[in-house]
Image (cartoon, rainbow, N blue to C red; front, side, top):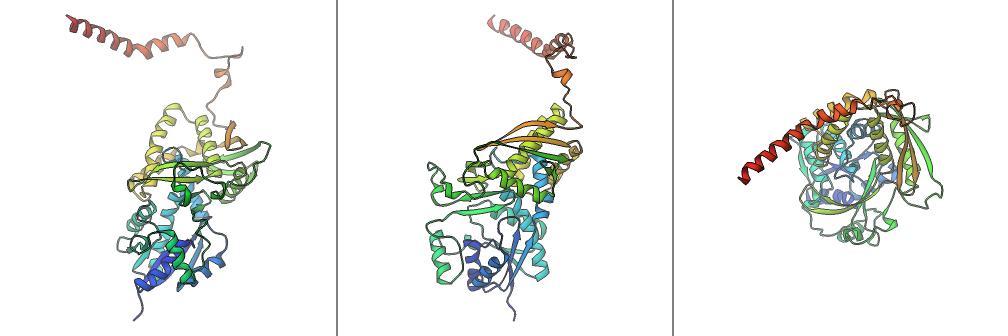
Length: 404
């Protein structure tokens, strides 16, 4: 009788490499690995070799960077998704994509189970499992890290070595890194001490000697989508990857966060998002140029909720879908170019232009070309402040009566 199958979301890291062996031996399952190429790995041959060394029977490796950029990054960019003001959600928006393809491969392989290498105290377990259950409620989910006997990464390393599983991590460099083209998340090791400054060797996308001279980049948007860098047309994936290399040299996009995890604990994470930081700032500046005040302010409120939904693993929820409709509604106006000045750990927007700009120099200027009607301001101020004048008068009458 053939063994039952499990589709494992396989990153090639320590945890998921150990998961293959554990699922095979402990659960007596035929392990099929699925790896999503969204920027976290570069050598498919190495990934296959590592998976087979751990006992996988089959390996799917799919290049999903275009789908990731078009269907996950772009909506997040339009929404200005940013959890707690510091985390641009690179890992969080990758998980629903992985969940989607786990389900697809499970159907293709006629598997009864899917599995992941997320810990019992992390957010990713929620994101993947809620995503899978939203798309395929009947699939059963196994989370080895919530069940197995290992209590530390050091024990996992020993287990991998005993079973001749090929891994890169060592006890001297125990960082856990999850990265894609939108950014990287780094944790573990000395980073678990919130007093310790992150060492330079912990960073991946933003390392090396910073150029001595500042640099300017120009990002062109059409209908809200970045389409050109410094005047050169590029598809979204290429633009993000190129911008990562340029801005990463300046160590832009680093954040060191004490984060409120979904499961209720606080964690210390460091993030890198060089391209995402620049694109988010550029897009927001362009929207400020073409949208009216009430739209921009209200969007900020919805962006906060949208960010929470992504962080909480609710990508496939009705509210998230409804908010997507709002954010995409006016993107046809978000067309133009933004100039950004890059210097060490700083990306500053210094110029913006659009054919749909609401800015009028003759209304904003303080020169002799000023066309603003200053006399109209007197009446505007009186009407604007009228409710508060009345409220003050009523309050004084109330206080006077109270004293009697």
